[in-house]
Image (cartoon, rainbow, N blue to C red; front, side):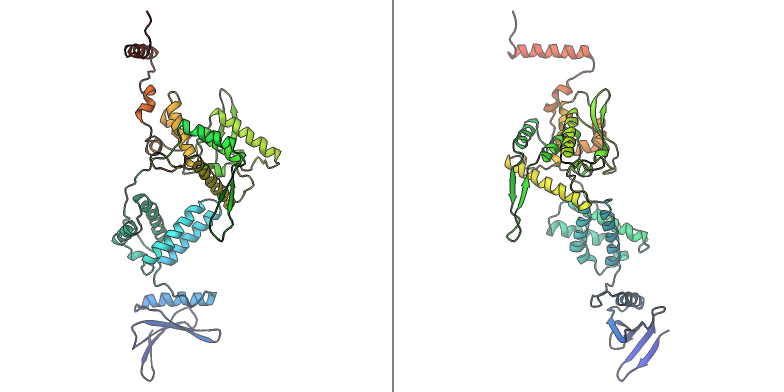
Length: 433
């Protein structure tokens, strides 16, 4: 119940906040805003709540009171909305999952940066329930025009907005999620190595183990040394012969690998589920030889453990695994730059991921009667992904022999004979007699 207290020149409307000790909100006739005050450690704490809405004033007063009692800096301006509070709750949960290795630390940092630099400045003073499709569209247009963000980049970050909205629904802040702008995905065809380019890469790395690259990162930072190691050489061979993603190689342990010696000799790789794929990788025979070399080297160095990591075994923490991958990727880039393979003739850049793309592409080109569904499953992807990202650069001329092939031996022999006759007619083959 409101009380009215008259002072010399001003009337003050005062109301106690139930269950919050001496906390009261009040409003002066000379001001449209509500204020709060309470006694704490023999002092009277006061604050303007900067709102004209009584219910909102009570909520903000409770937040301010709780912050003071819990020791939070009281000079911080209390947000008038729930957007920042609820979003930070979600980000805290994501961080905890990242610490446990359930989610990528890189993804967490990406979402946090987007939130701090772009979402919060635009929605700090907005409640979740007041966010509309038009507001999100305006943000997308702003990021597209001012920051030159592509449709693919917008799609990635706006999926984070949807996740935040979903969290708000789960916590009862809002009832429904507003429409989220949709963006057309433009597939960037993966860069790869042709057989000739891969041979050049393989030969250079094999002949230059021990070579150092010096990276100058800034005037005040100590230059970093990157070294071509035997392990990097083995990783290149292993990746080309197992179809494995770099992110899977990062988490691959010895107990994820079994050597099969039944009808065929191969490695069966079963790293933890990634990108919602759980199927095993089945390797080329060369991968078995590479893996045995890795095991032998680790045993000589007394670093082999059955539950240890196959690559970078000395880095056994979550952050350490990411550090190892970052170093390898940077070294691999320096190698590609050194031999003029970093940028393709089409202006695309290559990375450690290009090894996987190359192994898949070369299997399509060189294997006999290998269907894409089998290859997709063995590569922990889908036929659709093969078509969208891995095979677009393959021209029909590269596979003309397969296109013209027959399962019927007689038809194939007839075609082969006809082909030879045509070559003779064209003068490509000398005619006998």
